[in-house]
Length: 283
Image (tube, rainbow, N blue to C red; front, side, top):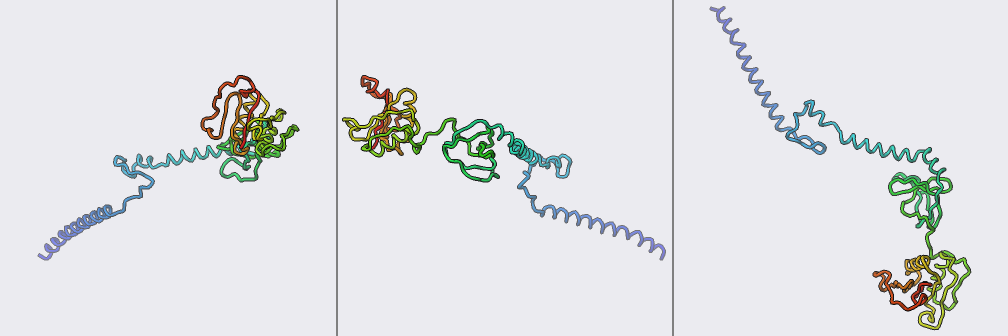
């Protein structure tokens, strides 16, 4: 009977162990589930969540996480960098400087830069009205010029094929106006003479109206050159103290400047219609 009892006890022990193991498995599963439910959400700043996306960890999902856009952006940046590096290389710059044979006039005072991008350093200025060599090379908003054999970069849009007109230039053709005219008439003569030295006749005093007052001048010229002078005076009206300008039967005045050049009635002759001179009246 004792032997039979031992065998029965031995058979019951595995059942108890199996039950305990099953309970342990259930407890572990519950703990895992609870952990998953309570885990914080992943950082979504860089990767958008797509409900139709494959399960994380799969081969397809891994391919979606590759930084394709970043790689493309890096390649674009590298390409831009490479282009600028080639442009600014010692060899390319030396060739551009040596080949420069075209000159342009500066229309404004310009800052000089060592290179055309943000890494460029300001190393001086070039004055308005200076004639400089240009290489024809451009990058962004800057163009390359040559000063004393050295490459420099300036802001584009301020170089001209023609020497800019300046009211501060000196009159060199020997003409003059009477001392009794107004200071503004003297300024008009000085500016026109300096920029249009071929004009040799200026009519000031005579016995009627504004001419008698010394506030008017007739600049004897005609054709296209006359229009250049008329436009020059109009463009600098404030500095020269100009009230109005007449040329080729047209008038421009400060009071009606918004209307531009206006037509005038026919006065019967070339001179009366101002085809052979530019008339300027000052304040």
